[in-house]
Amino acid sequence: MTDLTKLSLADARKGLNDKSFTALELTDAYIGAIEAANPKLNAYVATTPEKARDMARASDEKLGKGQGGPLEGIPLGIKDLFATKGVHTQAASHILDGFKPEYESTVTANLWRDGAVMLGKLNMDEFAMGSSNETSYYGPVVSPFRAEGSNANLVPGGSSGGSAAAVSAWLCAAATATDTGGSIRQPAAFTGTVGIKPTYGRASRWGTVAFASSLDQAGPIARTVEDAAMMLTSMSGFDPKDSTSVDLPVPDFAAAVERGVKGLTIGVPREYRMDGMPGEIEKLWSEGLEWLKAEGASVRDISLPHTKYALPAYYIVAPAEASSNLARYDGVKYGLRVTGKDITDLYELTRAAGFGREVKRRIMIGTYVLSAGYFDAYYVKAQKVRTLIKKDFEDAFHAGVDAILTPATPSAAFGIGDEALAADPVAMYLNDVFTVTVNMAGLPGIAVPAGKDAQGLPLGLQVIGKPFDEETLFAAARVIEKSAGGDFAPKQWW
Image 1 (cartoon, helix red, strand yellow):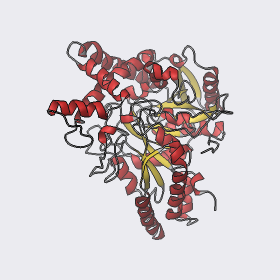
Image 2 (spheres, helix red, strand yellow):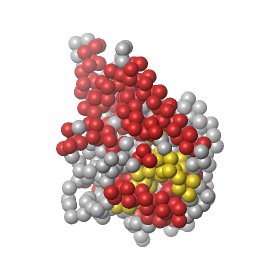
Image 3 (cartoon, rainbow, N blue to C red):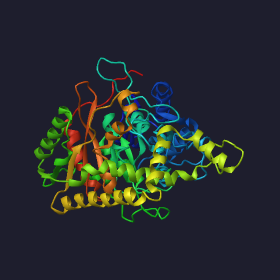
Image 4 (cartoon, rainbow, N blue to C red):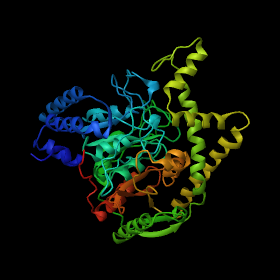
């Protein structure tokens, strides 16, 4: 039998429906792969093999009766940010030690409704704060990729690094992820996978540990554009428990994948051509535009003039919301508790011990920009800039642009413990330079593998779309995927 873990989600679903193998056989194949690889990759922080097998047996029963759902029997990894009833949910943070919620996030409940199987919880940057998956309390995730001729460990990107590494290394058929400033798209680009951040409001945030509530959005990381489309269809939908959830019908995103781009106008923002951009990123961007033109799209230069303010505005808005959201972790109700001489001491000792360095840094920045005397100077001004960024996109779409093509990241994956990035947090934050605008404007964006750098590491392109027009993104991403035609799987060393 073919190695079942190497099948795409779509092929696995076909094999299950054709009874070529059972859901239990597929699940056992993934459980074996995780047991072999996780000690080296550290992609999972908790595994649920018995729960997975029980879910797989239930799926086999349904499939035997012809009652299988859209994802029946498909084994998935779940980012440790999504609440899973009775299962480890700690946002990769020490402060949530031992927390096992009594409720299920809406996104994961939707996946279980459609028949998916849970393999376990995936590692991530603590509270989704990071661009390299090095801030996790459980240690860094190691990318399944290595530069040619090197044994040095690379980052998988962040914050959804566990999700990207697990999908890329065949440790789950697909994974849930979240994106606050690029945390789906950047790790997808670093690991040769496909990641889509849908429009803000498309997927419920209920039961997902909050970082920055006006920016956070759930989405999938998968191996192909079609797989990502299938995942997003199941993950999405209106949720009355989430006041930011949008009451719109969910299209069959997979049906749009082969729609093509004939007649579409693709915008190319001149502000994304930045000083010091590597030549291979520029070359890949040009190739992507040629691929879209060859399939009948036209290309138009556009201007998004407020792009240069997006990163600094993001790093005011996101920490401000994090400061507010993370105030609930006090050692009283759940998670870590470090006792002291009085209640104030308990708060201070618990938060000092429970939060990692990057989370503390962002809480302090956020508290500062929200404080009296600085609120207007920083937070209010950043929100005004955010409105201008959103208007830039609206103007481009109003002028006839259907989607926008940009690079996904300013470079390929870098090494774990990179000294220059460790010494300068701003240099690390610059990894989000091409992605944060999408979150600030609430738009959908997809990263798709499109090439490799000189060291054989994956590079991705990003397609940005109109609000709730994910279908066009899937169609454009599929054209890039077909045109790139490369093998973006890692060479197995683990």
